[in-house]
Image (cartoon, rainbow, N blue to C red; front, side, top):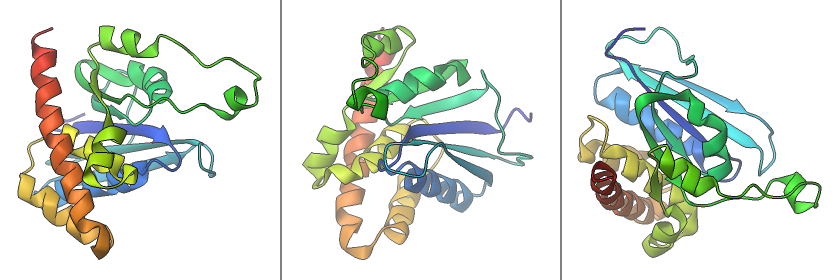
Length: 201
């Protein structure tokens, strides 16, 4: 795998906007002059099923496929999915985790208990925690949590902030542009904050 290629894994569940976030990221990378490969895996089609997106960018990218231990940036939209995929992260990779935990169907029907202690365990792995839902509400809608997470991720990537803004404006419906750009901005500020806190740990 060429050393210049960077791999981002976005993981969450249906209804969280993971696919939109991956599309925005891929477009930003392409607009910034990189070769880009994008893949999406839908574990289940209905809301609540696992959704995983890989975005790889660099001077030349052969494939969107990534192996365990090879991801540079893991962005988990949900805590359980973070725990499921953390082994894909490189030793020196960046782990961004939304603090939301969504109960699975077996948990909802009482077949199994919800896992506990995941956030402390993830923090011990170096996770940078982002309360994306709360920040999205501050921006105007909880549905923009995906753009909050992209804002938090953006501080680690070599793309101009203006390109992010332009792509978001082109990708979301016009009436939602301001809210989504604001969510991205709040996420970017939070991303800088948690990154600095992580350096001090």
